[in-house]
Length: 107
Image (cartoon, rainbow, N blue to C red; front, side, top):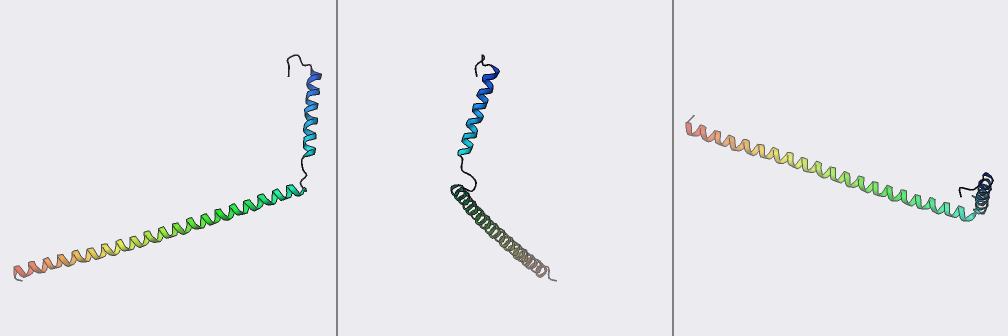
């Protein structure tokens, strides 16, 4: 647009642009065109495949999380058993020392 364009020039330019846009829109394929339908079907198939991959990844992540939680629970159980065994061993050593002291004192 030039500074010297008149209002009528701007109107004609806008009308020409609208006409070009309308002509371009008329050449676009309609929604029931086989090519459009084929592209839409292809997009749906791709989206379904993506959804299946997302579901598989989520399932794998859930399985890995479950395995990690089970391993942590097993480790916690082993630690608890080890602590109980250590406490029993400490008690046995304490009882031996107590019995030895009683034997020395002569009671």
